[in-house]
Image 1 (cartoon, rainbow, N blue to C red):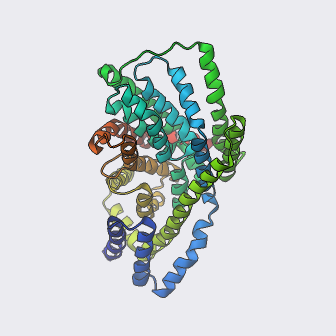
Image 2 (image 1 turned 30 degrees about the vertical axis):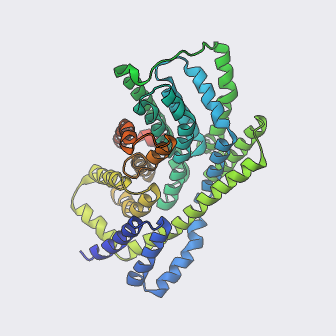
Image 3 (image 1 turned 180 degrees about the vertical axis):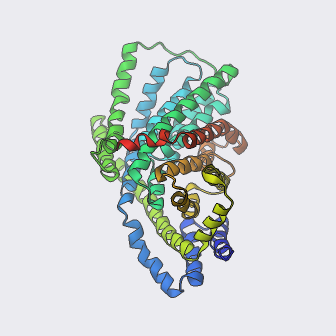
Length: 436
């Protein structure tokens, strides 16, 4: 049990420092320095940590991350998103709970364009939640779909979290991005079914109101003008990877160029929008690369100290089996998700989880998608689920955390159902990547 000492020191220190409010990157750097002094040769270990920096952030697989961020920011800041919402609103018509369906449909489309859950939920909250509240939608019908739409961006490509997880866990980023398409569509369908069921059992939850009759020709025009061009962007990002035309990095560059082209076509292009988008991406990318640098050293110290191998052998001796190990991983992420942000969860758990992939012969793309889905649940679980606070901010303080959390609960349960489906039917995640 010699591994327990380094395991407790490393994991306990980083969790304690983050609990005290230290930023994630600095919590890991402080833990790394302590671990290097204790287990890695002192000053020589610190020199190794410094030399890791260029190797960590110079990984080619990370190149799509800033470009996906730029693409999403350009799309949201330009106002193109509002045009998609307007078109979906016309298409849905006078269906009960129509605004909930619009939020979910727009969220699925934006997920394929932004890759950011917080940006997705933030836009839906600011644009749609006030209108739904004004129409006397109950909280679970107004805010639940917003939370569901935010979660979709975690797995529907291009997911920035998927790029980060693939880079940290050394998983094929392109395959991991593509693996999220089918589960993302299944999850969107289940969310739509949930809205239909909720309006059936409680019609007053989403009161109907008069909607002007729109001719089919006008609906078709709205779709062709505002939604079909977005499918062009989806093809440039996702289709080019599937067809082998482009790598994830090249597809990200094509996506940025495609958004800029649409901005010119719709007369939304301005250098101010470009500059603000670059500024958004720079801030997130800088902090992300700093975290990745700290994570690489943490993984090395964790392995060198014997904590990683000792923990793995101890878990294997419990004879939980393949499905037992998956269940343990998912349960761990669900618990951590109540208290940590998603990046912190990945940094702590991936050095522990990924060796099990080799030990049990797991397909790393399949396992990575399962971990992404479990991490997704953490975005909408109290007390620190980030999406909950995005929605609370949009409500202007009129909602309580418990109310928003209850609105998210059915969507969380359906995501857990999807995890079970992916575990039971791996081809749900692996079929499309097999075509690359």
